[in-house]
Image 1 (cartoon, helix red, strand yellow):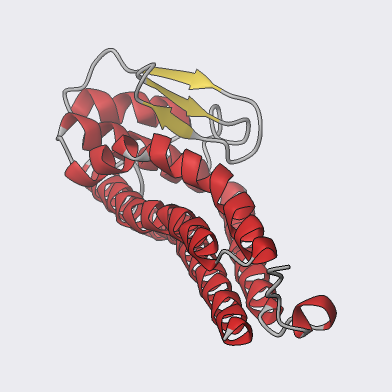
Image 2: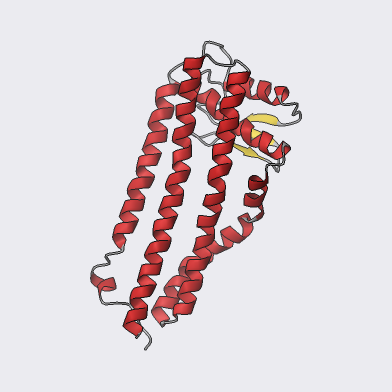
Length: 238
């Protein structure tokens, strides 16, 4: 029949512990950014500037014009859309004068500056989005069909496609870290914050960066799990 699942797959899958570890890492990172943002979102910057004000001043200082600053609903949904050339700031950021909000706005402006400075990794990341999305959708069906039919080459192709997500996240990590470094430098040089306020903004951005580290580790654990399952099925086939 070509069914090569090892017996434990139906009853007890020891590789599932990797999923649990990944879930714990992701949960910790998510709770950490929410707690850190909440903590520093209660502390107002003495400058009195809103996050929107600071974003506009940062872009003007960098000689970048024509980029709109818009409001978007949600919490921590902030992002820069290069296609529309617009920075979108969330409910808790847009009109806030908090240390956390200003730090987040500066981070998004860091992405704008990356594009205008031709920062290569961000272009590389964007160039593979389509392939990564395809791989994300196709990987699991191929993996499962390959295992069920005993076609391990097909299962391996599924793992390879899923690995594109890991590659994307590995490229994204330095992009996000670089944007945060730019943000801290800009906030410091522009005197938008006092030194103690700057330390708070930095903690928020570090917590945000850890969510990307968590995403990399979670995907890495998933790839490892897939490979262990394939290896077990290969032994069963032999």
